[in-house]
Amino acid sequence: MLKRIPFVAAVALLTIWPAVRADDKAVAFPFKDGDRVAWIGSSSTNIGVWPRTMEFLLRTRNPDVHLTFHKFSTGGGTFATGAEKLDGWLADFKPTLVFLNYGGNDAAAGEAGLPQFKENMEKCVAKVEAAGARVVLVTPQAADVRKSGEEAAANRRLYAETMLAFAKEKGWPVVDTHHPLETLQREGEKADKDFTINKDKIHLTDPGYVAWGCFLYERLTPPACECKAVLTADGKTTATTRCKVEDVKAEAGTLSFVRRDEVLPILPPAALLPPRGPVPLEKLSPYLLAVTGLPDGNYEILCEDKPIGEATASRLAEGVNLNTLLLDSGKPAPWAELAEQLWAGKGLDQIGATRWRFAVRKK
Image (cartoon, rainbow, N blue to C red; front, top):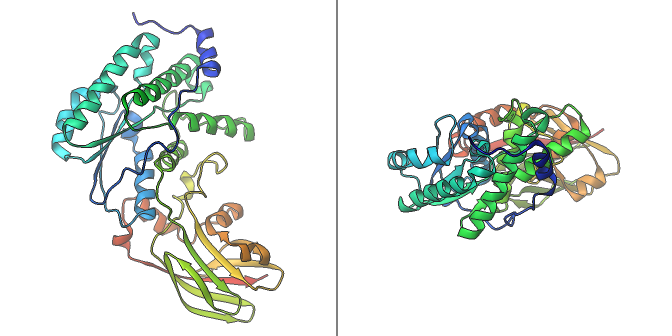
């Protein structure tokens, strides 16, 4: 029989287990143009929301890095399962970059299972490297202890900490998504006692998985993807970053213009969004607009005649994030249909350059 962590010890582990973490910026952006990316893991990988979040962010923020994706999973499993299946998966897809996400099910073995956990992890990394691919390890998920139970949550934390320490020892790239998800649960409960990242004992809600994907993307130190237009109230374009501004009109208290974007840092579909505080939604989505020289007052910002939100003249002069305005206003995104297409797997190269008319109108 496997040794289990006693209940009291499990509770203690949640609070006193040393935080052995990799540096958030220790993993340089691993994606290269032409990479074949394999997401490999247990049921959380098989569900596919965190990989899809990564794909959405990569396609919209880095359209010049052309990538092919495939996920491999038995719908459950451990690093032992990975070691058993990897040869076939690697041979079929021939990935150049592999993300390994096991540990959530491994953790059921408790402290007694740690030596085997590390041995199987090492086998998986060796198989990936022998196939000529690069590897990134991703920690298992955190839990809402009300759903998982104290012992299971403590074991997952133990295995996440072990993965981080073992990867550091071996020099393997590893990304800690476990602790950010813990923080999301803790902060979410403060705002709403019924908040949970879990839909059952082990799996996350879809917004929880989107948060996971955002945490992973952020910790892979992606290149800046700022998309910004700066105009004056009288219709001059003074600066642009990764977009073009055309057909500017300044008349009757309204400034309007056509914007063509080279990158598109919009948010995933609204129904999937996690709480914005603990999750870097806006940080990863700098879709910016600045207008200087406007008379004092409040202004409505629109896209294709659909409202995005409101801002003061002084705030517009400093620059606003259109995603922030949307989240503040609670309005549906004017580009919601496009976000759905991108979420479904289309790239900007398939959709074509966006061409939207924006307007800034005095209230």
